[in-house]
Length: 141
Image 1: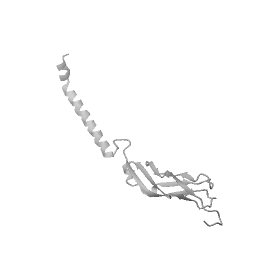
Image 2: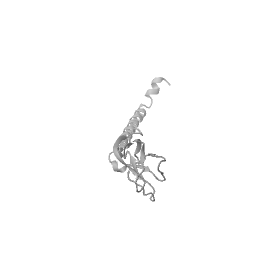
Image 3: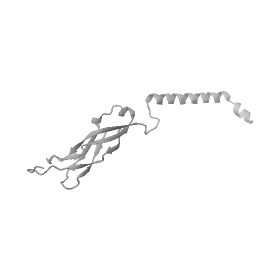
Image 4: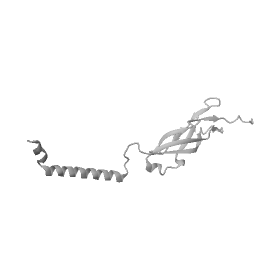
């Protein structure tokens, strides 16, 4: 079989196959574009929230009035654009767990941040806070 025959034989079927393949590709591309599928799996927006209050959690039986310094943190998060467009600062919680803490020990604690589903925590600044213990009862500072 000559090279020329290899290209010309069944030329109609070959052209039909190319047109069909292009049609399928364009259809899939348009459907994917309309559904808003990200072109990369890590596509998303970053947002930074300043001055989020740090909530203090301690045992219910612990009546001491703990304070932390600084009492606010800066949190950077990322996620899909549709989620980040409606994300509010009050949906992000910065918490310091003081359960079982004793005065004079471990005066620095890590800040734990909880975020809504599909939102990824990127950074907390500062990542830990100092715990300030109240003065003993009956004594004034």
